[in-house]
Image: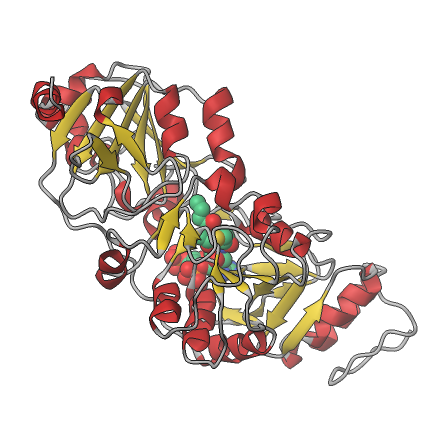
Length: 454
Ligand SMILES: CC(=O)SCCNC(=O)CCNC(=O)[C@H](O)C(C)(C)COP(=O)(O)OP(=O)(O)OC[C@H]1O[C@@H](n2cnc3c(N)ncnc32)[C@H](O)[C@@H]1OP(=O)(O)O
Ligand SMILES: CCCC(=O)O
């Protein structure tokens, strides 16, 4: 039988495909910009027949899932997520979404060893002449979830870019149970973060610390993006890309000639990533582009793999950091914001790389919901805040007031270093708190801050 005959045999409507789902099942929804849309709508239409169907997704980008919209009391569907988008955190605020803790590098192992998967649904590109559907922008742990699934349903979308791998970037038709041709919905784009003056000040300090031939990872959010934009306009040469998330700034760095990948030790000349999210321009750039290679996340995010490249520079954002150097990047007290994601993977990997540097960037302040200015450098984390990067793991911390390296520093040295890059308005208070916490010595000094009496 030819692949096209097999295709016709497996082709069904979305409503037909979701009939396979039973009450109590665990159902995969796909990841990031590649989550199912038409299958979601079809499953929502079955609400009255189903109870306790558990959904797993990662970073919802295509609007609130229909299964959540139709079931505000969670009687029929329970929506779980490995890493929150703005949509997911708002659902979580309303008790309509649950977080699944993870280290991103371990996610394929969670699937292969522990997670229960009844039905795996995912958005894919159209089939090629060899019978393969490409996973598009999402390699990550897709193949691991498929391996565990009893039933695999693909939702074909002509707008999904076909991204070359690496490995585990596609599925053969022989492993697919049902094919659904989608309404060819537009692939969700990520709004380009606004770059602030503070972002630029932080970015400039980091760029000064990047050498020719460095291998770059940029995290999610406005600040890492600002660094990428600055690199694209710099005179740095022969950079490499080995990252978790492929973003617009990396495409800019490549198109302005800063990225060649010539000095990488592994995946030479390739820009390596595990998922991509950005603008339509980025998606067009990635489509069939031999300059890029997508890999599963247990490869891209393995500290041992990351460290095989020299001068790895990892740039990630955070919400809050305490005077011990504990970094919270995923919650604000008990309000869950995003997730651990790959931050720890890259901080560890960059530290292990020869000449590597891991930067946590953070604006010194933020305005709370009442418009009050607050310090992001705090004596102890807000009760309920999650430690994303532990104090022993954290390396460089950068604010608009400077950069410090915490590695090897005693608690009192950390307190001094971190207070020196806090907003001047909060430094006196932080010194007092450091004394109270018994992490301040007679010899502690502070440029620009009033040192309290001992
Ligand atoms: C893909 C990769 O990134 S590779 C590895 C990197 N992964 C990680 O670092 C994972 C953890 N990091 C993250 O999730 C992000 O970098 C973040 C959350 C730290 C910053 O992301 P940004 O999109 O720049 O954050 P942004 O400033 O928009 O804030 C996000 C939310 O947190 C809230 N928030 C941020 N800081 C605070 C704070 N100190 N107190 C209360 N709420 C806060 C904001 O109000 C916003 O909520 P809203 O959408 O309801 O308004
Ligand atoms: C799911 C991973 C996203 C991140 O690392 O931030």
